[in-house]
Length: 179
Image (cartoon, rainbow, N blue to C red; front, side, top):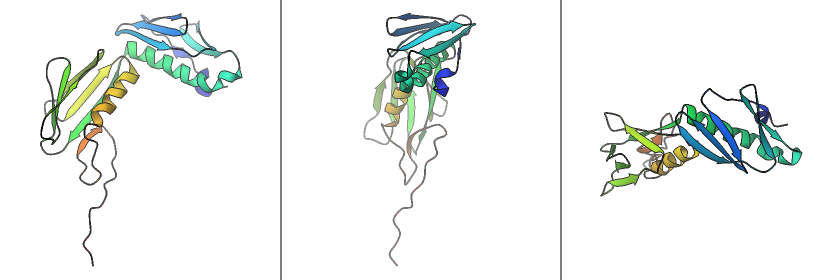
């Protein structure tokens, strides 16, 4: 059996879930998340815990995945998910333009306007070098952060660019003079 799939998911107070066909709908204090469930995996509630149960061993490969997706949905509607991005470089900065637009200045000849999808919010610190992306859907938060990072990936020679908070970069040596 899957070790991840066997773990129960705590169902906090105020969180309700319903399975409609092969779609899971989780509602909580922060909002509502829909997640598709593969065929052959059932969700059971026992003593305020959700258990993912598979029909037979042919669903072993997706048992842990399904449990993780359900856990992410439950955590999202209770606490939410956040990703932090650091903008590193001289003159590199980020600012909010209204509620749904993030403007990056990343050393190009023009500023880059990045529209935020629905359900995603962004916050910028006072120095305009740290961006916090938050939302209730973990996949969407991660995808938006990856799209923002791809605007100017960290340079291995100068370590400038947009990177995840806490991301360790291996700095490469530049050209060396001939001897």
